[in-house]
Length: 254
Image (tube, rainbow, N blue to C red; front, side, top):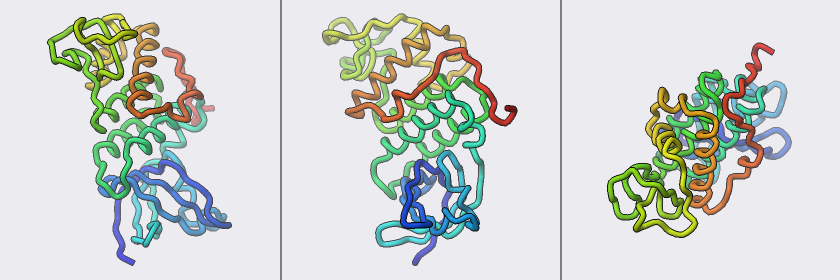
C-alpha cells in the first residue's frame, strides 16, 4: 500500500474489534482522514496514547481501500493534558473538535486553514492563555469564515450599505440595515458588535476588554449564527460551561 506522511489532530476515535481503533483526523495536507490504528487498545501498543482526541501528531499512513492505516505516530503536542482536567476547557475543546469535524465535510480534500486554526486554538486553550469562552467564540467565527459563512459586522449583509447598523440576522448573514432588516432580528448593543468583529479578526487586545455582559450576548449571537448555517446545533453545545472571567484550574498544578 502507498505510504504518505502528514501532521494531524485527532478529532474523535471509535473502537474497532478487540484491539483496534478508528481515528478521525484533521490533517494539514490531506484534510479529513479516517484511519485504522491497529492494536492501539493493547497495553503494549507503541502509540496508543498518542492517538487520543486533542492530540497533535506526526503520522505515517498507508493508503487503504476504504480506511487508511496508521503505521507510525510521533507526538507533536499532547494538548489534552492541559484540557481534560478542567471542565470549562474540556467542554470548549469538545466543541472545537466537533466544529472542525462538521465544517470539513469531504474526506481527503485539503483543509490547511482549518487545521492551522484548530491547532492554534487547542494550544491556547491548553495553556490557559485566554479564557475558554473567548477561544471558542473566536474559533467558531473564524472557522465559519474559512468554510464560506463569514458574517458581516460592518456593512449590511444584504445590500452592502456601509455601517454601523443596529440589527443582526443569522439568515441574512450578519448585521443588516433598516431597509433590509427581517422581522425578529436581534438588536445587539454596539459594544457587542465591536466585540464580535474583534473576535473574527483576531484582535485580542480589543476582545479581552469586553465586559461579561457583552461576551454573553456575543456568545448567544454566535451560537445562533452557527446553528442556522449548519442546520442544527452541535451535540457538545449544551454541555458548555463558559462563564466569562471565571478562572480555570490548571490540571497540571492540581
